[in-house]
Length: 132
Image (tube, rainbow, N blue to C red; front, side, top):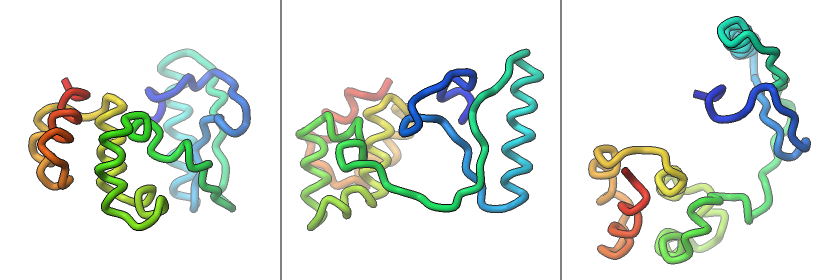
């Protein structure tokens, strides 16, 4: 799935680069094996970096739950549950909605989950409009 989500042969500015970060030797091995398999299968040179995770920095607020934040009315419903923006950013519900708004997930999956998000009837209808 990771390899399908970006151009593994491209170069992007450092803050937007695709990278696989690993914690231990097993993760490193799995990442390198998947890279090699892709190169062999596609006959390409993969430029996606694979590196040890030493520090992690959160992106700026406007990048957090990016797709969901673009749908102001829907984002406002979820944000209302949290006393701070950090609560919204850390929210599993916001992450799930962000994925649906971005075009991931299907109607069956949404139907199974939608009531758990605590959205208004209008919010549920709005969210459903992003799902095939």
